[in-house]
Amino acid sequence: MLLGEKQELFAQLFARLVLFGVAQGYTVVIDEVARGLQQAEWNANHCQRCKRARGGHTGAHPFKPIGILESLHRYRLAGDLLLFQRSATGKRVYLQDSKDYAVLGGWWVKQHALARWGGNFAAPDGGHFSITHGGRS
Image 1 (spheres, rainbow, N blue to C red):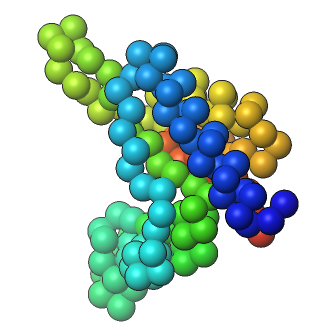
Image 2 (cartoon, rainbow, N blue to C red):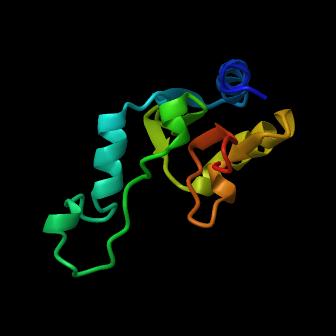
Image 3 (cartoon, rainbow, N blue to C red):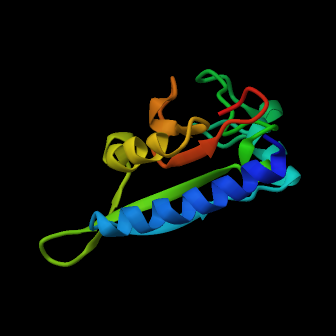
């Protein structure tokens, strides 16, 4: 499948995913879909834990980049969602645990053989939904 065809597939599935999440009772916010080269470079060179650049990283903990340079977000094949639920008092509560996204993740991976959910990654990222390309998820 060509990149453009995958981008069309991703857009259609991602739109359906948002609607599916709303139908499940969540408030759904689209966080990040397209990512430019400059942002991808920044993510690849800054630590997830302390947000410092590689050169300024203190070494108090292992350096773990926020993201990778060749992120599928750069190819418009990945999107991140933020899920919220209403509390008993009506307050909007942000769901941060990858497990909170499991219903959406399970739905997503059933939509197409190329669909991947970040909650299934070695380092879970529940809000991440993508279409594989070039060996990346």
